[in-house]
Length: 396
View (cartoon, rainbow, N blue to C red):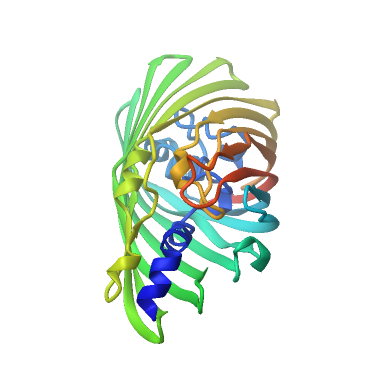
């Protein structure tokens, strides 16, 4: 009987449902810290110096007001993530995943004070695949595949020489596929749906060498829906994912024409993740929150950019971030860590073309979840992996 299955596997089924909607392109980070090759090299510290298109679209839309001519850009990041889980009940698994994060956009000035643009960034082709181990009480595989794309139609205005304002509407497109183990079957679904968020940015040059950047990302939501087979019958499944609001404060200092130093702090209202719930239309016993216990988090970092030649620029960045998930929310496919991100790269100009290349790595602090803290999977969670980025920009 289905009711008996739900009773025996209530905890495991509820935990399995928490395994979806992570941001796999950034491994254990629930929200992307960077977008584009330059921003990645500077570890996300570009909000007060968003001089390339992707930094403007992702970190501070006011940066589009700095665009002096029509530009178009496209690039991608590749993430090589190794995740490991060792549980107290005998389950040990290591997974290696490669995820892709594309980015692109274009912008053009309309007169001297107004610029419009359209950007895109997100995670595509990401996958988690933890294998079964019947002896450890896991009879079927865990499988998650997720794509979330963010669009960024943007308007930036420069009311005076030292001030710029940018406004961005962010339509979101989500696609989620899961195989969740249960005693007699693997619950399988594919959820798709749109969402929306918005971004407001300011740039203020308060000194010839100093610039202040402020960015506010509003709360957002993605409305995902589909169907799932439960006990031999199909039923609707709905998941409204709450996207947290964020505030970024950043400074840039240009002590020399060829050198720019940057610093930033970012607050994320990630406690709002507790409001997201999976809702089964005919089997409410399976309803469960995305993450039952979360907390607000901070990220801070620094970056440096130096033009060593009229056509060559070098960059380096470092950032530290906190984990958003309390122990009860950590599961095999929904884990979050304190992290240290290191990026380095450069850009080369070839006439109207610029190519940016970046390499980086993330160092994650292991998490040991005790039996008294865990919802269903006590054990040690760890992750690590490098990333590479490229970006090609054309000026017209």
